[in-house]
Image (cartoon, rainbow, N blue to C red):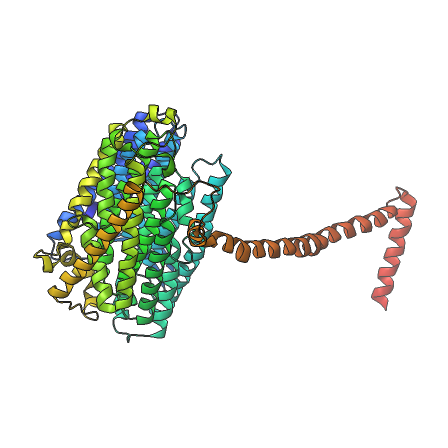
Length: 632
């Protein structure tokens, strides 16, 4: 089955080509079958690869497809790397991607761009698979850029809306900033190691001393790429605006695919980062700051998708915190569990919006529990998973991250617990305001309330089950379990494991779990008391807010700061250059040459009199002058 790995990315791209070329001639049912079937086929092969790899003694297999680039000393084959990390991401991308495709059949059924939407989804899956399968940094970069392109197409899918187009352009431009850092990092890797293949680079890197300046420079540049793609401070503002796309796009981008590319890249490059302690500290600090910053913004948002968007930014911060403290398995574990419950929450939010006739403001909701029971139950499961309720998937992965942070630095652990507490509060705030209490929308909306079709609810049910049982692959030894995921990923992180020793006692882990559960319970109670017992409602637009509340509600004016400090000055400079350099200098030279030619020709043309006698006279004079010149 491993030898068929080339089919995994090929099937979605075939779906893209068929739907893209013939989508208008095909029925929506057939488009749905082709779009979903291509990803399902890729998922089936990914399962076979995963099972074959678990029973294979050789845990890292490179499949060479063809010679790609050869120029001087540079030789880059187009090859795929099959190992525990890539096989796990194959399952996540194709599995969650398939469920989102199925959900989209119902959600987008009335959209005139149905075929175009599925073509974009298939192309997105293809590039994401290319990103995680490549055996070198250049193939990863191709997939990296490809998902950036597809995110632009999907976020701006409803391109007739100018605001949506602006959101798509914002995502594209901000990602290019990070991508430049990533590209420079790849160039420095080649200059340093003479190769960009993972195996060659990592084998040479192991022999370098910890703290090597070149490794520090490489890892910081790679991290700049991760900051852009995975929406960390300061390049995070594009992600909440990406809500402009259809809800399945939000789930696809925010759950298991594009935004986790940065985590995958650092996890893949773990030995480089382990040997660069300064870079590790930067990753951890940026991660925990992002987790806290985004969580505070989530406390005051009223758009159901915006709350989940800032939640994604915050959860990505937790993953980077795990990477920064050396808990690589914990970071990948949280990528997996986050894929389950965040896809569930976004698709659940889409079901709520579908029932509410497009309404996204939670101030206009309430009491939806009895109207959409399946959506309510699955959304509650997703909420319990993301806050780390005991027994749910998020509990195990978040506990592992906090344990790693505690061992590395107590302050990072405290900030992580604080971020987790805020996550609990704003998620239950969202849950209570949406599903509990009395309905606050219009009569027309209340009359329209109904459960979503099975094509939408079945993926919700599957994701709900995964959100419950997904954590069982990583039960810590302190709870009497076997951390299957840690054992499975051990070959990928073994070179780093020798340098990062984890030695928390079971008693310490019990205390840390107890603290996290207690803080979570307090946050749930406070949210319940505020929004259920006291029936507090968020302020309406135009109402005066307390200064701190207003600052959080306005998202700290980050977008406005960027607009005034970066965008407007750059626009002014570019406008000045356009007027002076382009219009006056460049155009002046070009127009001046043209004007000179016209004036010269207008004078010379006077010599063209049409008088043959004059022409003969000039010819004779010319011959005489030539002869005189030769004689002299």
